Amino acid sequence: MIRTLLACLLAATLAVAAGAAEVSCNVKYVSAEHVYLDVGSVAGLEVGLKGQVVRDGAAIGELEIVFVAERSASCTIISQVQEFTAGDAVVFAVEEAEPETVVAPAPAPESRQRTRVGAGATGPARSRSSAPRQWRGSVALQWDHGAETNERKLTTDTYRLPFRIRGDDIVKGFSFHARGSLRRIERDGFSASTPTGEWRNRIQEVALVREGRELDWHIALGRIGTRATATAGPFDGLAVSRRMAANLRVGVFGGFAPE
Image (tube, rainbow, N blue to C red; front, side, top):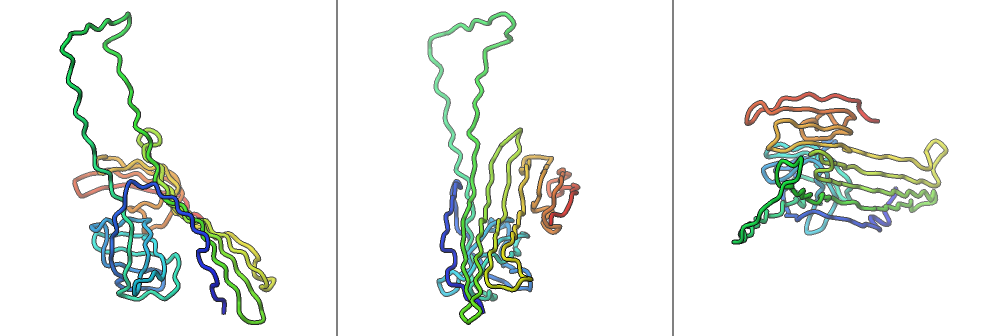
């Protein structure tokens, strides 16, 4: 049996979120492929969030949300050192929007000023104010080393690069969404039928997305893994939807399922 000698030896996390608040919940039940939680979008959970599973005050693994309903959510297992069971606590860090600051305009000067308009001009010149583009998310580097304790001397090294990045208003109202995990496995001492090294990447989303509660039209282009299409899994293509009523949105999506 292979025992993990060193887990997550090197973890460097870059977080540029505006702020974060903890959301605590519990494992409702565990199936062969998913872990189900007892809270959902009402508590602030969303697809792509990662949380720590805690038992008796110690972290025993990590989950990633793949589907969210109003009062429930389902997750896949990223890592675990013990089997998850119903009742285990799960803690998520949910991003909070920064409070908007309203600046009162400066009072107009008492003296009168004349504006001279040159030929071809239709009015006073307008100044363009460009708000800085906001990037946030996280990138981590993880290394797991396993070695067999008997005479076979099998070793396995797994290198992971999980990431979750978002850039707002990149071009013409579109944002950039990216999340997934790059994984490289290196083996030594195994039989010839077992590859000595292989990639097992999971790129769930790399897309340009135009969406928002105030927008009638939502558009996503690229590798899409949005909430509306989460049950179909990630795909490479296009998704378009339109608001028909306050609680009704109709759309279409199509593309190719990645390997």
